[in-house]
Image (cartoon, rainbow, N blue to C red; front, side, top):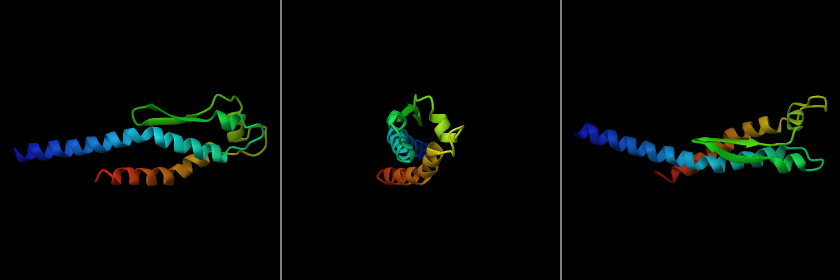
Length: 109
C-alpha cells in the first residue's frame, strides 16, 4: 500500500510540473519572438512586424512569418551576409528560457 501511495504522489507531482511547463509554452514562444525581433534588421519594418510567436501544440511553440524573403535575410542568399536572427534568437533562448522556467517551477516547490 505504501508503494502505491508513493507512486501516485510522484505521478501527481510530475503532472503538476508537466502542466506548468505546458502552460509556459505560450510565454516562451513570445519571449522567443521578442528575441528574434530584436535581432531582425529593419528597412521597412515589414519582416520584423510579421514575426509571431505562438503555441502550436502540447509543449510546442514556434516563431513564424509569412514574409517571403525572411529566409534570404536569415541565411543571406544573394543579399549579402546572413543575419541569423532566428538562429541567434534560439541561442539566446537557451539561457533566457531556462531562467524563465527555473523561476516558474521554483514557485511550485
